[in-house]
Length: 173
Image 1 (cartoon, one colour):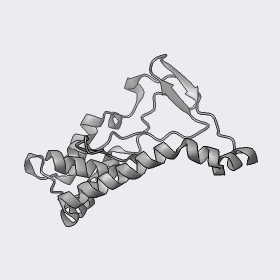
Image 2 (cartoon, rainbow, N blue to C red):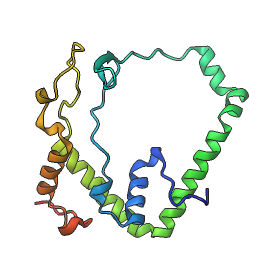
Image 3 (tube, rainbow, N blue to C red):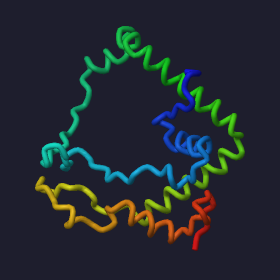
Image 4 (cartoon, helix red, strand yellow):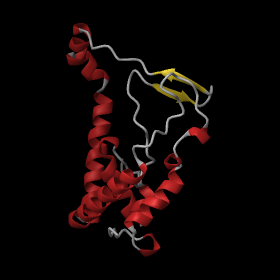
């Protein structure tokens, strides 16, 4: 693990992205993840490689046999390497946060969450899927203009007035 300059943890994505921004001295806005339209089971998603929509299947409940297996020593042995890696990655992220300084990190994390929420307020909620409710492929021109992330982000940042020269300051206008 010491061979890596940075290790992020998906279950701690906001913390990971803020730590990365601080290490690389990037503006927080540069680490915002793309807005993803959350699709749920029973709706359609787009397969870019085949230019087709497919139905997201509803998951069945785990059977009693599955639940028992997930409690078994066999399963625990099978995932022990993954659990060890996850634990080490979390410890590495915690050490990175300590190295940055807890107060500085928490201040920047608060700003990042505020920025992310503000951008989602402006850009989120648009129906950006390539599929209709019946599974037909929609042309890009038929989607909301808010689906163009670069344009939407510009509007959101103007609304927020992110500090000059891309600094991490956030001021509501």
